[in-house]
Length: 410
Image (cartoon, rainbow, N blue to C red):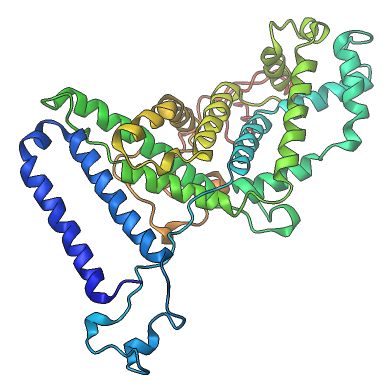
């Protein structure tokens, strides 16, 4: 344990060493910024090694208190002789990657739930049981039978909705087990995606206007890291419980649903080319809703990719070159998620909100009721489109808000 005098001398020597190195290599550092980054990294490692060596050394039983207050034979004669601590362990930013991956899968499932995949299969099952569709002994008919028999063993739609509310904050009411809903998730997630897209936008601009190719880009990795750490810390405390087993079961259920929808007899029944065409056809014919399959599906795929990237420790990388290389993996997924979310009026693109003040966290995004979304959180909804008559209530959706069919003109 260093004395106050030794501790101060150590800091002064390190500052003098940095100044001397910068002075001797000033010409090379201007033309090669990567050299400056490497020098600082090595000097930081020296400081860290000295701090760890001091912490591992022998410690007085009273942590130097008697020496500080002047009690006993070891009382300090001068203030510089007292022992001083160099701080406590840093905040643990590590998160179990399996739990964050589970959140990514749950987000993927939620978007398919909003598309209507599960209710499409349920409607097919009802029509099959009622003999209202021409299915009998084909592959799709047999899979529908198996789907019905296994239904009692699965998590119900109510269980899934409660999990979405608890982990993602989407929906209304309390979460699973009367837990507090995670209403901050959507705000933090969209903020992180915004910062990733803004980082690469700034980098593209700097690639055009900077003089030398080796100059650092304008993007700030500290801003991206802060947004990522805020989101990871949020997920750290909301990803416990039955989330892991639930997402495994429901992912298998989703695959089973698409096996039914992609069966030849089911596709022939609706004149569809693939399972997604069956989903759209059933939604139009039996639910009369506005189709949102394409943007929601892209949000599901790209949102899961972003969350999987966060499950690693890439966001903790301090070197600019390494950080940019790792961040490149989600550059396009983040841009595509943001574009799809904008198309659904679920996020907005911003170039000014660099950090998310903690006091602004609360009801956010689609966790809040549509009428309560402020302009700062969400763009205003476009006014209703033209109104068209419907064919007996079963035609293609032609406008209105929130899936409510528009009234016909008199």
